[in-house]
Image (spheres, rainbow, N blue to C red):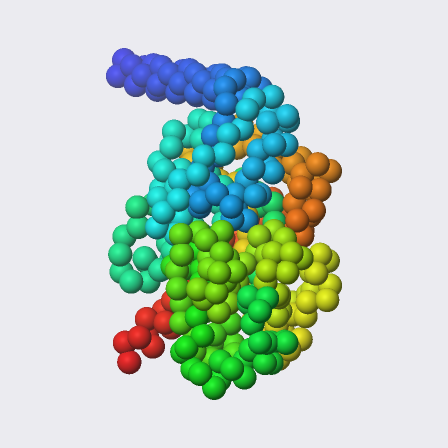
Length: 343
């Protein structure tokens, strides 16, 4: 073996030893980070957590957010504070949540009020301030169907009477919503298409004001969620003509579904929790576990189902899949609306 060959072999051995050393250091660093992450998760939280509610006080989102906070703070051992940041059909609060520090201390109360207006912006060729990738879904609390309600003094005995009047006066009956393309607007679009009728849409500043518009007779009808609608139904302020779902609600068994009455309309509004993207996985895992525990908690179940809603837990992974499917459905509706508007 000549001197050059011996030199080359020595370099190869040295290179191999360096690669082994680098690999060892990488593994050690990964284990250290994992241990640190685990320790971080074990210590978390060490201060109050803020839940951003992108909608105003009084609506179903607010009711569920505060019910969640009341139970989650006991599980987490730190105060969980709901902060309302309404505006632009939830986009202002959602943007704040998406841009928050990914440390687990600022979370967003998510709902259909996020994908619905987001898809509308995308369908119109505009770039939203945030995207789905800016959030990590932690889980859903409920998947609520929406009522079709009118003022208690309205002349309609049932949905058939209402549709007959809508047919006789196309485009004259008006419905309110919490805002453009939000959780109480989209069911109106779906119902309008399923019934073949034309209605006038009047956006309001949130779910509470939208329902107040029906009570005060400023509009003819509305699509509220069970928690906001049932107290007013039971109080004789409004009456329910149908529920936009495949099955009747346990809390309102006498109210038929739209499908039972010949209108193939179905819509569910989810409410859940989202964290900013890049939140450490140990924190995400801990918060996902908290969502599950809250949904199993009797106090939370009573707070949600007492007003008439139903707890329907969906895991973080399940919510992520649901949001993808829902967004595709919403995008299709919006594309059709834009196409029809162009004609």
